Image 1: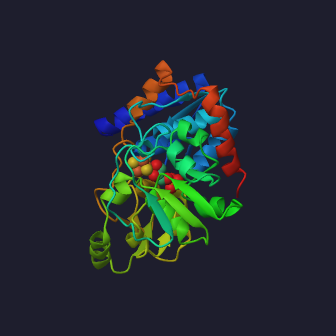
Image 2 (image 1 turned 90 degrees about the vertical axis):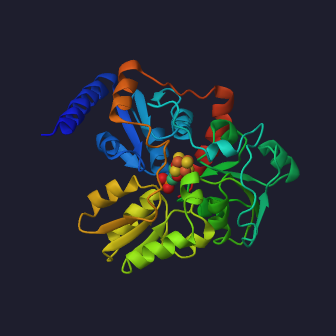
Length: 332
Ligand code: 13P
Ligand code: SF4
């Protein structure tokens, strides 16, 4: 056994022991490091992890993911202790929309996407947006803060955004914060979508049509599967567009043997594990989310030992944010 493997085993054993002692459950997003995914009780996409957090009986939830995910767990399970092992693990896209102010985002891209109005103005807040479009419901991607969810009508994830939009009686819908998820939804509904101008650095800034052409030339027999956070022109070239767990299902059930994967590279661990006889190639090697990678086995152990970092959403935000999350969870 190599020294590294011995270290990993020691850490794993300590975590398993402490997890039992603390009556804790470990949830990990599909983008987490392989060894963190392997120690988790449940690995999944945002929707699966939200559902798991809502119905767990454990006293402690260790959330191996980013800040908004731990906040969602706290919103749904207020009597549990929710721990985020790395307090600095945030989501830059979630930070692009705030109730009080908007951080500057790029304003030059894809404004010609059919059926969508993009809101660009600097210093424009979610409250300004609601004032500008009175009566228009706000659909908040789960990649938002609890405070933003509290100001929204309903949440969505990448796997249910179209169903969520369709579930609303209004014909015009505001979608925040991801312009690419908005574009994905707009192409699959007759409703008018007004979108926030946010994006994910990993899926948007590191990806273009040239990457797709290059990957397809290198792997001509491979099927292209991408996440709806990718730019619209990349989505248009894909054989399948899905959430991270949707990708896992698709690749497992497909008769094809090779896949080019357009999302954060952490998912390849589970893809290979669940379909060991198939080949997976990441669309662009730069598709690594530094925030998702902050959490290591050491962080998980420290979280359990020191009970840190506790994520607790205050009640005045939790109640309205829960309404938006519950409304989403009621939808199939
Ligand atoms: P899903 O796992 O829901 O597809 O979300 C991807 C993501 O970017 C989470 O940060
Ligand atoms: Fe946020 Fe993108 Fe990282 Fe997901 S992959 S946590 S959307 S920055």
